[in-house]
Length: 307
Image (cartoon, rainbow, N blue to C red; front, side):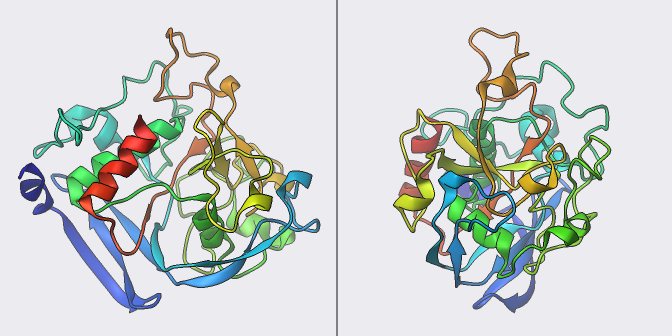
């Protein structure tokens, strides 16, 4: 089995137990010195959605609903260029490499056609940016092939639970936690420079907006207490606000549908499914569900979201 040989190179370094017997840990990507931290988030109950008094509230977002959620792991920071380059620059990814054919095949993005880094470079903990949702999910498939652990981008419910962390954000304190239009100097910043939230997660608000699995439905909050999955033709969603947004839009409940204008400068016909040439404000964060799905469930997941 090809994956068995791949999985044995994965290295996990565990931290003390917390979050209902889940352990936070450091994941080292095999064949490299690059690593990332996964934080154990406890099971709990929270109010999903926004009230009329919340910053970032829009009329289509209410009413709030109480949701129970299982414990899971979430990336301590947004995925950085240090991590993402191993995926999209094949020369940086030494053996073993994921399968290239068959249902477990992993494809890589076409080379970027402009510099998406705003001239700041790709090393030093800057958040990866300008990718489409498809590219973020394919990165997760590559990461599964490299580590043997199923990672994905979060649902809206998971993302909002991790962002709120059992607390209400006080707008007056936002500068301590987030890069936004008034303090960012019109650029994103290396991850982890602001204060973490109560779960120990950095940059959940501001810096770059983060892809979630769901696709936009104006009535999404009203329809379900579980993740809002609707037809794939609808626009995908980013959460959290970003370095270009005013404070009112940098909120745990603000949600935005992907916009074709984010890729208007793409010269390709048809336009790329990997990149958004005009969205340096979009990135992503990964989660790891608990327990890990079966091999068939994982395969079905990637077939659904990548096909």
